[in-house]
Amino acid sequence: MSKKLLTVFGATGNQGGSVISTILGNSTLSSQFALRGITRNTSSARAQALASKGVELAVADLNKPQEIEAALKGSYAVFAVTNYWESKSREIEVSQGKAIADACIAVGVKHAVFSSLPNVTKLTDGKLGHVAHFDGKSEIAEYFESVKGKTGMLSTYFMPGFYVTNFKTMIRANPQVNDGTPTLTLPWDSEKTHVPLLSPEVDTGTFVAGIVSYPEPKELDGKYIQGVSEWSTPSKIVSEIGAAIGKEVKFNPVPEDVFMKFLPSDTAEELTENMVLVRDYSYYGVGTEKKQGESDKVLQPLGLKTQSVTEWAKSGSWNF
Image 1: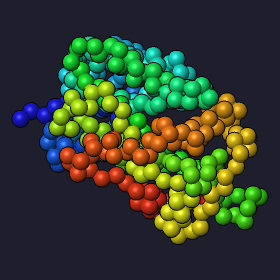
Image 2: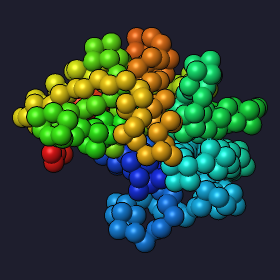
Image 3: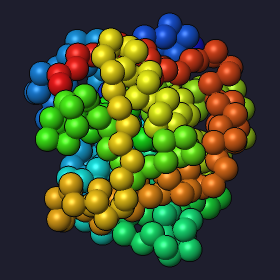
Image 4: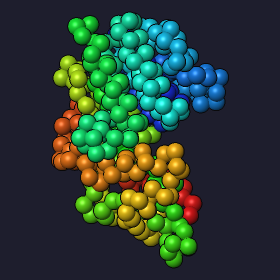
């Protein structure tokens, strides 16, 4: 039986790289899918490492629709991801995402999986209206839905949670603030804030692999999948990281205006509202921590497991 071609955007990045690693590392999946990785530089060390493992490489500039279409030809499924932070422009990101959607339709992709996020402005009734890197991705997902029409293409939206890798830079040992104990300082409640954590380099692939290999793919059409390795609270997060690395880690809750002062002026409002979204709306919406089982259904057919905070914390080095 011939393999289905899965084309992955951002093949050398966190999300795309995770998808490729997961497929390659699972004999069932690697027997079902051939892989094509899209990158802007096929000669880079990371790209060549993928090529050595049998991944076909393709070049595509997301600002050039004709290159996107050429890179997607022959694809059964596509995993697409856009990067707001590269331009810090919602308009540019949305334009790129729409170009991907149009290309998927043009070449006859059967299943498109887009890395999206909630529309924060709508979710909060306008109370949080400056989280552009969420709202833009939501707009792209809406565009996918609007253009696929009766083409027969299925679309599923993977919504990555809060990256555990953020804690590598967010936890700081600052003797000017406390006794030098590594501390996580955020405008969250230590016990009441529900944090949807994702280990991006591992579990992006876990969820996307579950989506593209799901035995009844039509059931996932138009569905939004919460990409969460583990739901936690701030106090539990620092406790588990501390236990894993053998060093006490504290949590320091601060008001929003204090937190905002820690941030660069051009991103302060957006990132502060992002943290308020986690605190007041559980990131995906109030009560969504109780609905994770609906998303985890995509993991069940292959028995896929997510990575815990403890496992992640033990897997890398920490410098305080």
